[in-house]
Length: 331
Image (cartoon, rainbow, N blue to C red; front, top):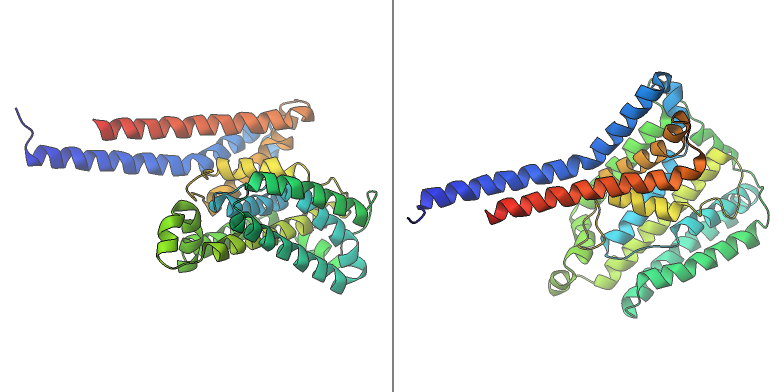
């Protein structure tokens, strides 16, 4: 008995609806992971769910979110940046020294570092070099420069930066407001503008973008320049919170940034990224690190393991959803 056009249409509609539900569930995974971490914290220590509690727990969430967004721009172009952590440390050293004592020189150094990031994007594209190797090499360069700028921990954040990072608005803690603002601005710029589509297209379908007349070199430069810009903002925010600098202060941000992008729904190929998801992923990692482990009386040495476990669970759920979606399409 052959299937009628009505049956085929009904099956096609059902498959499309199932695929839409799967995409929705997959998109909600970052928010669900954040909600689960918040529920665990509320269960272990209800007093932490307060204005003061969120201000304390999310103290370092802003620099982590900014570093995650920086990594997201690079991943959007099908590349990977292994130097963002040491770059954040370098920016922190410059902020606590030159930007404090000689603001004009400090601004020029930070602007020049963004330019170097843009040149890295051009080099990777023109010479067809693997970004992992290039940025891994640059991580040692940034680390060395940080040590030259500040051989031992010290320095001091500029007063205006301390004032910004210590701002206490009514009702809603500043880290939450800052996270919402970062997510909204980047989401609009990357997901809602025509040039944002071009930037994402350079990672999703570079051949089609080139046929349409757009310069892949220019998009790569812009993506890396944006990564450098948000890396600078991350380093400055970090020093505004810690008040002083250390050449190794941002070393852990490389893995945190990658994990935040992936946890937020990004993928290493195809230019698939989500600014809102990346910020949510950064907040999840910030909460799952010290606060949750402290309330569970687990040593801080398990921080990396906890972040890895969360990432593996979310990725496993994502694969399961994608597999079920594929099975429905085959039926």
